[in-house]
Length: 164
Length: 118
Image 1 (cartoon, rainbow over the protein chains, first blue to last red):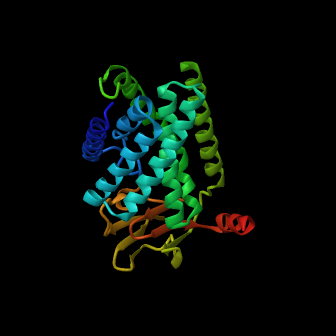
Image 2: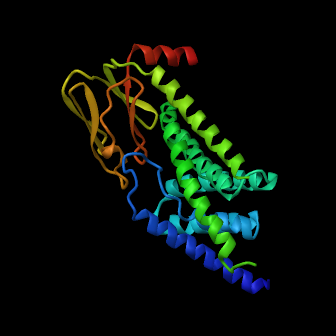
Image 3: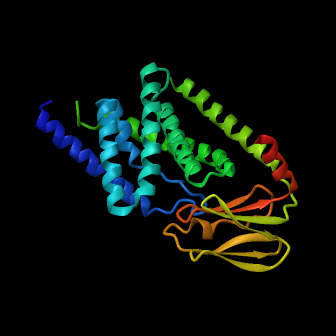
């Protein structure tokens, strides 16, 4: 694929992820528990991980988080998102490499690690071990959302004509 | 490869269940003090059995009624703290992350475990 086309496509992916993250922010999910989200923008991340490479997935995610952070969030939200996404992408890349799990499994792990990453940042900020109380909930939520994103991503990876 | 995924799912559920079980065991029914920390420094310790409204700095307000504590008001964009359920058992917390406010129920059991852990 020509370099210019690739750059344009990746730019498109960033925009897509931005819109997805904005749309999901308007869908209320469990207002009581912090950090619970659908993770729709991860559709783009997982898609890129499978259709292009780890580097592109990280690049698009980082750019998206920065832009989204400057537009809608603050330094704190950027740190949380960044920690969760980087950790999640690292683990997903490793799991994909060992080739024992399907997209769904990889995405489930990604979802869980995303939440764990955010919990770790929170632990630094607030410094209570009591944050561990959120771990079981976040694990299950990461599992469920990871599964949904995994199923959807699997379909996208098979059907979308981008990045062939 | 879908089967391996199932093992992963079961594994995660087990880890979550074990964590939850451990946390449940460490909790004590009868917490009777509320400790409020701001930015990791103890702001004050209050009796859970006394009905009172406590202003924390100028960003949060919490209230103790009926042996439990809730966050009445918080100057923060997400309002997670305000929507949190009332806490009354030791170890339970309400946290306002943007303002770094932590409400925690403490009692003898929790303090002893923390000192032993240190």
